[in-house]
Image (cartoon, rainbow, N blue to C red):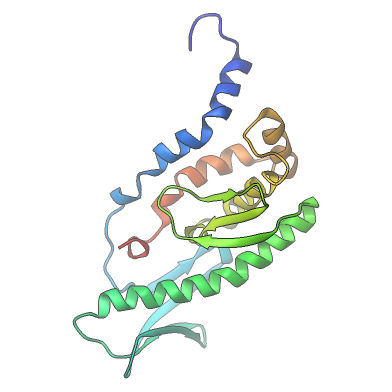
Length: 202
């Protein structure tokens, strides 16, 4: 930092450019090693869930569903199946995550007396979430691969934006009020792409 610049000035500068820094750091998921597909298990740490993947076979379009604690892929298996299997897994993941994330966002909003309009789910490579000026919160579906405390921090991070549409000192003070350990959790979230299975973006 330049000579004579105060720490408060540096912190304000970082806060103003935090989104840009996070986006630059986040362009790292492509470096994650490609795993075998289909996976033997699908783990969703944010929900404390792990499913063994069973290739059930059958006819017709591939569909993924949970039965008896097992995630089954049912349908015809042929040369085009890997791409179809990914689509089926992503479809199941999106549906399953929506219910859980809606419940958790609603609970977090209630605890902090926040108001938001609706929730959208996205699958993005560089952003974990956002909040529009209309109170629409968007969450990256990849958040389900993070630890529960990291997901909780992400929810607080976006909910506080319903009151502060910036990353000002007041914003971070509000985040700290609802999530005292936010600095550590923010660092974990920035590195969270390493936890996302390669098939999600294959």
